Length: 54
Image (cartoon, rainbow, N blue to C red; front, top):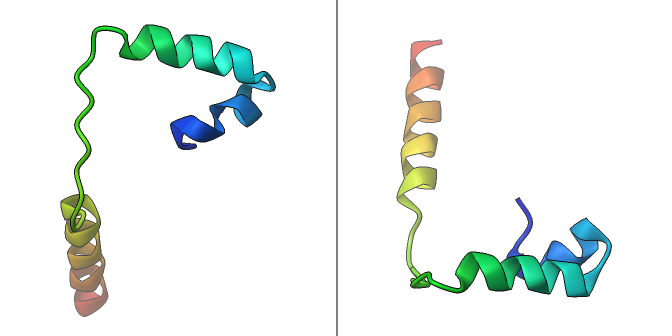
């Protein structure tokens, strides 16, 4: 999934991408989360378990 600042390239039109983001974010609370990814951490642990079993 491309980052929102890359949506202009995906849609081929910066104005269209800006309009879409404006409508999506109009009533939203944007929360920026910094730090380690628990999803990635859990996935890496699952891969390690799979490798240990094999």
